[in-house]
Amino acid sequence: MRHLPLRLSNLLLPMLAICLLLPASGLSAPQGGEEAPTVDVAELPDTDLAGLEAAVADQLREMHQFVVHQITETETRPVQLAEAIGELGRLYLAYELSGPAEQCLLLAARLAPRDFRWTYHLGYLTQNAGRLDEAATYYERALAIVPDVGPAKIRLGQVYVAQDRPERAEWVLRDALAADPTSAAAEATLGELLVAQKRYREGEALLRSALDRQPGADRLYYPLALALRDRGEEGAARAMMAKRGTVGVRPADPLIDGLAELAIGERVHLLRGQAAYRAGRFEEAASEFRGAIEIKPDSVSGHINLGSALGRLGDADGAIEEYRKAIAIAPANATALYNLGALLRQRGELAEALDQFNAALYAPEDGGIRFQLADALRLTGRGDDSLIHFRKSAELEPPGELARFREAQVLNTLGRDAEAAQRLEEGLVIIPRSSMLALTLARLLASSPDLAVRDGQRALEILEKSPIRRSLRSFETLAMAYAEVGRCEEAVDWQSQAWEASLDFDDQTLAEGLKSTLDHYQNDRPCRYLADSTPTVDSSPGG
Image (cartoon, rainbow, N blue to C red; front, top):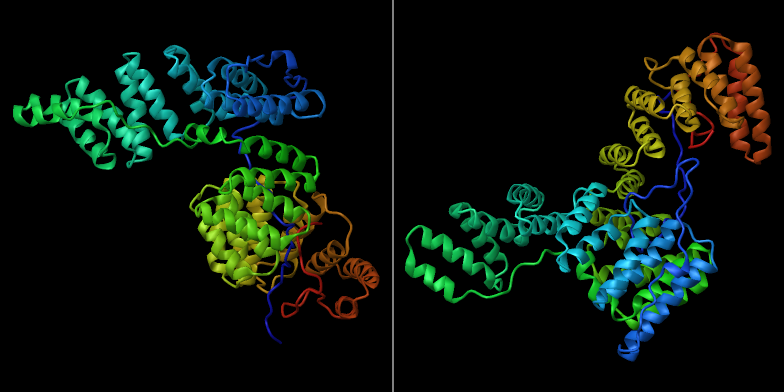
């Protein structure tokens, strides 16, 4: 008879059309006994809007009312409330209303102390106000939350320079440049610092590189002139000095650069839609997201979130259309690519789904994208290619239970049962209460076509220690394990229960297969599960 592999069945994942409207970093819930932070309406800024243009005043007033509603009339979690208050602060900041902006950002940081954005904006606000000690503290706190944000390092370096702390400034700017060697802002700031320290050759090289990237940064001609004068090139130095100006190099900074977009009014609709989406009011959410798009037709967030709302309303075609619109505007947007890929995958359009996940992998440290890419590769028959991504997904999003199961499933399909068993054993060390991994490993050890992998005693130990629910699959796996150690009567008992359970499924093929194995356990000695058989019930996630 043919030597058939044990098959570990598929799990149909739910549609992943969740929008990452306003990603928050490192958020944590209060620990046991710790009260969640709260905010009172009286703590919001009471801003005099009389001197502002009518459209601006209306926008700020509407946003303020939305925040008041979130505080007083909804059961909003602190992190979500921080989102609304922080966005109000950003709106004030966009209109250069620094006092109200700071008041809101402080409240947001209190509600969500592990969210990088609010502390970072406070650093930007205080830096612009010339309050350098506070700015340094805020930037340092922000980088303690999310260490690898290039613009934050550059701005902190600028603050250190202004504080006359050159060693700290050089360290943080070199760190920023190491992370992004193409950063003209890091090159310019560090180059100016080195020239000021009379380290002319190092500084000149950085300044020239920065000017190549940003030719309009005429402020850099002055320190370049100093460097040229140091080595005696007076004519070239005078030419440089004649071109000096005031334009420097600003770091590319999506958070700060995005402030200008807030002044066009889409943000209120996005926040209202987000609140409605969280509350399960998807029709209302879709309406708000359409409002955002009406104000700003190229709103990437508007299209992504409308797609997510339409997906929850069952309009898959509409969701796909919105995700495609977002990708047309921002081809590298990982959220749009991921959501589109997940929806296409659910519809069975695996080739295109795979294209979207590959495109989204420009953000390689995202475990969810890694998993979806790996699973699309698996479903298109590229099991070998999927393995590295399943493993990376488990590393990026520990404990990675489903990724570990899928990796073992692929290894099993490829006939590499010894590796599959090893990976499952490693998974159980990390997730000892995983019934999914336990049942899969026990089944593999009890019935693998590779007899060198068989270990019935270990399979029984796993089944006895793990919280596996009573089910047809667990009954059958117990029977396999008892048969492997030669306890045939117990194998018959458990296989009988599996066969009886199958009668509820109205599946004649299933019942006949189980009955055939039951006859084998009853009549053949040894009664171990046959190496050339295929289990009648696949080991899918669960148990």
